Image (cartoon, rainbow, N blue to C red):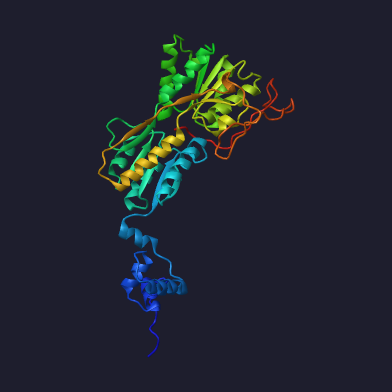
Length: 388
């Protein structure tokens, strides 16, 4: 009697039937070994040897259909090149990896249609859950969040009645910390370079700036307010427009990318930082420590928000019946040389995770367009994006 033909899938790949026939065991026994359930030592040896011989690869899709788990978690952010999202992603990935899952990252460009399409694709259950950080929140977002068949955690501001796990910070309080610091340093003509007002962070930071000035009894001068985008180039262009019409003695920027653009515009215009104009950014990303002078910035706890969001998501995956939770990460101001803080120590160098700060760069030639009266020129950022 001829050898029994080994069974293959329609696409020619070996199946559990193939392995069982090769090992001379039942399909049930082969399945138990291949799924890690166990078996006798001899059965395990035979099945593993047979699987290696025929080139058997477990079907992850079939397994996920049986367990209703994919082992994947998604993160959706506006721009994966923005340092604030890089810090958030690293923290999320660390937590997700500890659960044996992998992280998929989506860049949405801040487009509402991209974000809502991603949320609706969750009906296909291609991931076990998602963390999303939208800079605009619409009724379409909320509807898709409520209808999602898998858990979703939002990093950012949501309404009090949104039935979704949410990790947030307080941009208005962060702006107040920066304005208090600048006023305390004797600054009165404080400019503000913001991102789009139709975004959640843009609107919150604008409101916080106006309220903080009023609290200090400083009249708002609209010539000192510029709106652009949460990007380096837009921040620089907005600062150039502001400088063309008025003279600030300080600039508060709605994120660090804007602040780096502002710093370059100021130096190119011959303004000394912080002697002529103090500069404060927001997000306290790696860029803040890489600039010269080092940039004062409001920390909004990007990594901590990411860590908490990942923990909430894993808890929600384990227990879908949990009530919606809301966590808040408080802001904090980090004062550095750009607003009159201490200069970095000579041996303070940036590390792989962004800790520490650089020593002063060598002076540039006078012909360098970014070289102000102090001589050195800050480095150019390569990433652009919105703050969260």
